Image (cartoon, rainbow, N blue to C red; front, side, top):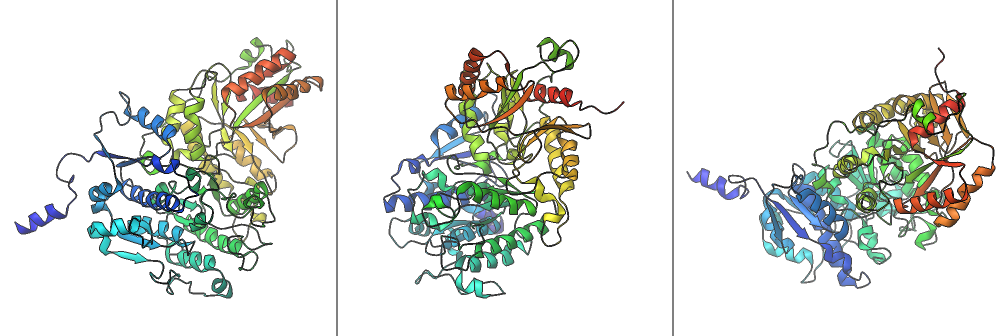
Length: 616
């Protein structure tokens, strides 16, 4: 009897009663604080890291904790879930007013605390890695009475007795035990090398961390300049999903011709060497399959000229160099880039139930094209400018999560042809968004692979001759990865292959894309128009159209003065349906020779123009 009673005391309070309700906490106050004030910055970061690690633990098996962070975005999705017939329609919800209550509720899930200091900048990312592996909440060490650290310790909950320190609590220096076995000269002068190489040996090389996910998010350096961007762009709340998946966290630069500008005393190229070692370990753990990296270069804080820290390189070259290396180890980016980088609750969203298949609208036939005047009586393409907008860029779950609520409520949505290049691998973090856009699609909505398929990589770096360590070609892994999403989301066009600093597609690359994207591809390093082996139509990506509508319509109308027919796949970035409708209307006032078409019409016409049909 005593044994039975002890089990009741130790068990979670919900284990023997009704199913656990969903708990809801409002953390939006953090986005309204002035981060120039030190106490505000510390309070926001400390609470955010605690919440993200708590979510990662308790939401791992099922959705239990929702955090309201960015009001407009989070309210939209929460209200969708709570609608009659919605995902959470029947679920009991308990709103709590303070995070201490959350610790009291969820303490049976928490096995301890991992403690770090912003004085040892990489230690914040080490903490997130350990949080996922050992079910610990992350706390920055702070002796002030009102700090999150002191408040948590004061609860005296069972997990507060199990502390894992990453720093000395007196000197705030990294613990002497945190150093790699091969304590090289680089490790002795670079705290980043010492920290991340140790973590790699402990958690990646041993196979403890996920073989599916990496996490690239800014470390404790954020405290140096907390007001450089809005708090959501600190990407701290993005940690929850990756903690739930037991991902390895890091923050490293890419260039070999300069020290990382957050650690100027290191030898040039140190960060790059560490990154290469992490990626190689990840490649081995993934057994050569495609894996996903969340995050992006924190360019406003470090690693670029824009950070104002004396760096040599600008943002886009830094992006391209980074993606080139990641691609060579079979990694794809879920690229939470600054601007719309923030996102909470992916650990919660990951449990949203997706359907097994989402069909597209009825695709156009040859007869449809004739009826619309795109095909002449003799079967040739009519002399027009065919424009297909690539409404990018959506290789980031965070960007998609924030933008879809705005675009789907835009008055022009449903009135014009919209081409949405939503990278389907993002459905790992935002399945709710994919279900929403497909179940709320208009007859004029079309979906294609975005950059550069099911994830942002440079396909040219899948070529064996461009890879290090004897790593073989990655085409089979890339095809298998994409076919899964092709079948679920009815995708057969890749809207933009970003080649960056990598080589363009070779023969094997064209063959690979013909298997999951047979209706067409657009790329940077490719001839302007063509057909590969009578089976894969392609065009070179056109301009990035970022001008105001009047100027943009002038640019498009000028194409009518050039030889016809012509095919223009034009990229826009974060431009709304209303912006596109305005450009279309203005262009059509200036010329009747431009046709704005969907991607399937576009590439069907390219096929006809290039005689892209198998020989009979």
